[in-house]
Image (cartoon, rainbow, N blue to C red; front, side, top):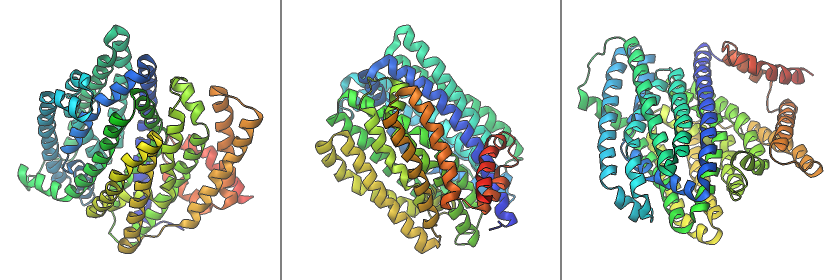
Length: 521
């Protein structure tokens, strides 16, 4: 079905932004993966588990100080700019960034002062005190890093996101191994991590000044406190939702600290890091946040954007989930070595959560945030936590770390079911279950040749990856048109969204031509 001129523009802008987010995030994750592999191999499972735990407290405290301002920076800068009020957007951006700096500085000092208490009473490991004290400086610079990312997204300047992400990744991958080799061990890995955010924040500041000047002279419609009040009133339900997710995530880590060994925590951390292979595909969906902010709630345009974005997200993430599940052992052992023997199982179970993509799980949050229904996000985050809190300790005592992962998946399924129910009933969006089922069918059928090949040719490591990934991709691309998961209108949409992207189009064009010829046949 032909898109309207407005939807075409939104789709093209989202595709451009998504491309920069995808390429920037992919490159940064590849660079970070190299650094992670070096750090993990150098430290070993036990020390890597302690390194991971040292970052828990700064992560918790970082999540406490946002108050929804990051999401507000994205929404209001996109909304005001689309309405032609760029100077008002500049005013809110200036106030928001000042607020983020002050809160980040205050929380860094608090972490520095109480690091020993956090180590002893929260993580059950008093030896982590000096490492948490060192990591406290992360809070300020990660706060600035997140604020710049949110601002660049709202201004449709995703190239800025890509740049600072890659600066951070390159600096961490360069500095942490050097400090490890110099004999600083866990402290060296942490110092490299901190320094990378310091340098990325400096780069973000310079970029922000450039984009800020392009908005025109700031028009002060509200003073500092009034501007913050506007942003917090919008973003507080999102902050509360993020706080619930933070509590769930760190509650999970604290349970691990009490019920799992350092080696198990190290293996689990590797599984979480490798799930970033799929987050590479999810991250560009962040470009939909400003897209949903540009159309009217409950409009036909909104429903079409939701339906299309759910389908196209599923086209990427579901097959990626299937192939990573099949080849988890080869991926882990190739990258991190056989000493991380528990990580393949943890990865296989954890990424099952991504199979919910076909039901709109990735897009739902951007939909509700974009149209201002932030309280709905809070409610299904609360449901998620309410299920997870009692379920996690019960299942981990019975099934170990795998039980903890199952608790996470069960709570997520129930909360997403609630979110879908509200989206359908209140906003009147529709899920294309037929399209989703065809994508699931094409993905699972594409794994059948891989299954038999691993029996006939029992390869391991790199040879297995080099043989199985291309076969899976070719099978999947062949099955997409044969199962009806893609039709001619999808091909036209892809050409419209990506045809003008000089870097992306040459890569995507052969795949689109291949699928198009099968459709014609």
